[in-house]
Amino acid sequence: MAAGASSQKRLQDGLGQSMGPSFPLSLVTLLDPLRKQLLPVDAKRAMKMAERFTGLHDYGDPDGSFRTRLGETIGDVQRIDWNTLGRFGVRYILHWHLSNRLRLVELLKQRPDIERIEIERPIVITGLFRTGTTYLHNVLAADPSNRGARMWELAHPVGRKRDLLGDERWRRWRGGHEVAMNDIMIPEQAEAHHVTVDAYEEDFFLLENDMAVMKLFVGLGDFEYARTMLGWDMREPYRWHKRQLQVLWEQRSAARWLLKCPWHLWNLQALLAVYPDARVIQTHRGMVQAIGSQCSLSGRIASKFRRSLDLHEVGRFWIEYSRMGIERGLQARDALPASQIYDVRLGDLHAKPLEVVEDIYHQFELPLDDVLRDQLRARIAEEPKAQHGEHDYDIADYGLSEAEIDAEFADYRQRFDV
Image 1 (cartoon, one colour):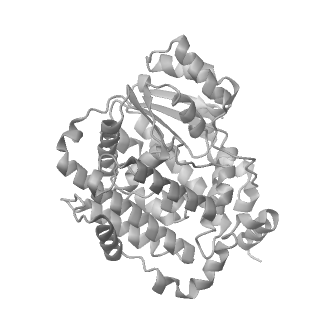
Image 2 (image 1 turned 90 degrees about the vertical axis):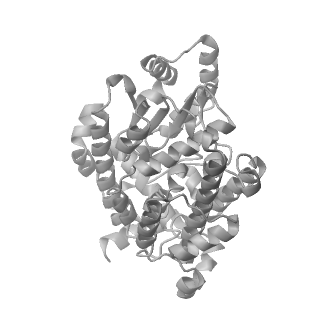
Image 3 (image 1 turned 135 degrees about the vertical axis):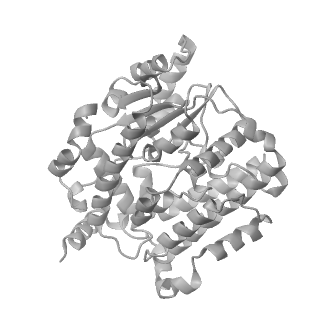
């Protein structure tokens, strides 16, 4: 038996339902012989469906770059042998974000003044995946001056055609629908990252409305697509990211934006081109734990949607992609003054969370009084990790060893003492 197949069998034997679709969704894969005829994936069909659903037709793409990204996205997903659930998921994601795009363009045509809203000195939490960004984000969101965004806002920053700047009830319903689908298809994800409709979430959703779709590789396992995007000029997706922050700010404002997404590390140069005054917090964790946790989460989710998955491919990808994230992030940071950067080790954050937060406020010259300290202490006491239960994994299942990971990231580990 091949090494990859052997490790997958070990994982299946040890974790059972964690690999592949769970019953009764596993019955849907009986349709796999007809999956391509039942669920075709192409740009023309996806755009027509979104246009019929929204009653809108303008994607706001004068230079054609949006359609280019859409075409490359479609080209990459067509190379993957998805099962029936995977093809449904890809189609749903495309429909979701194309519909959002049409509504956003329509709103900005009606309200061009929104693009004049200033987005000043946002706090941006980033770092490799599985390094504590969610915990820190939830703690800092206890400060009412920090404008965090809930899952439903990010998933659907605008409403339907009749109420583009409002329609909150429908947007919550749609966000809840997507959370429910996620819980049904990937029930064990809650062990590592539990998603709820009102939780503070990552702002990658906003990039996806400009067809830079993180879910397709972090969730569904299209790793070649992640490599493709490394060659993209991501400044335009971040300009659309900013427009959506302006839309959400018009709905509810505060003193500053609080953003969080590990994927920003790979795109930090583009982010800083759009938000040059951003205050960046980078989280750090032992690389064996970070890589192992991400391989486990990625492998479990992707196995629900792909007809076959080599777990050693998962391990190789996350080693390579994490190295690229570190290199690209450090290169972008070199252009920033030290006053705009703060580094957080996850061990310190867990051992002395309030001290770390106080130091962040001191670094960025943010007001911090006793009332706010009490609010932060209360949030810390809640242990807001967005994780239910224990997330167990064995890096050997992904063809990796501690020695290999430690050697691969020796310079990074030494620089940040992790």
